[in-house]
Image 1 (cartoon, rainbow, N blue to C red):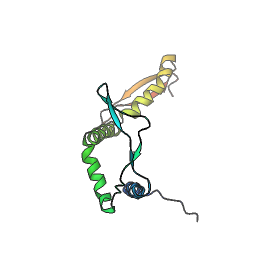
Image 2: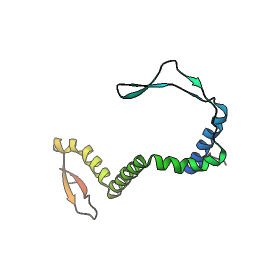
Image 3: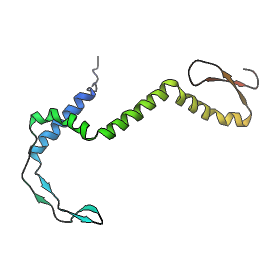
Length: 136
């Protein structure tokens, strides 16, 4: 029997990525560009890169990285959860499937080869049954 490689859990992938980033803070030299205000905006000064003291991330800080990032990006995270929840509700009602199905069949309705009959069903979106002119 052939074994297939199974995708690791999402949290395992995140932990691996954060641990890799932590290790890279010990390897990649630290540096910074100088910045200046131009028309009320901070911009990087060309050819101003210089090395600064290395500040590697300790392994203990790995476990603080995700909660700290969620707090700092709270508005964006909340927005993504809100939009994701809205799409989840739309998907569960079947509205996307019905609208795509109806969009595909509009051309047939324009040609007069089919007619639509609304079949009542529970849920916010009704199901549609298609019949040809021959009564099939």
